[in-house]
Image 1 (cartoon, rainbow, N blue to C red):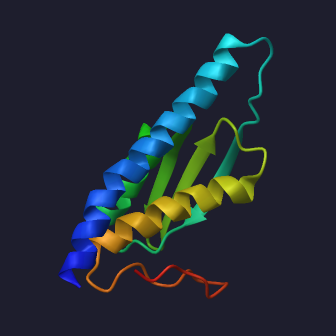
Image 2 (image 1 turned 90 degrees about the horizontal axis):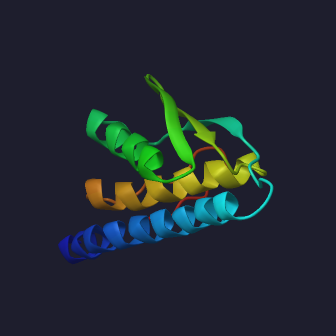
Length: 125
């Protein structure tokens, strides 16, 4: 179990770094080419995070990713409101935040990320 958490702890920065690089490239391409591919949207993302550390970490990860920003946080129940510059599909933006949350919870919780509510799907790590 401890080995699994260490592996996830080492994988989190690289996965987040890859997300930042991809988002930076998308933003740079949009800035350097004529026109704009921006499709802005606000989405509400219910979280499985429970501690202030987990909620703060995921909110910061969203904000540090180019093209997205955490607009508001509610702790009871834990919820983020996220603005995305390239949110042509709101479900895809929401899924991106949930994927980051999966990786974060795999590190912060001994039993891994809990199942996602509503659809029973969640990556147990």
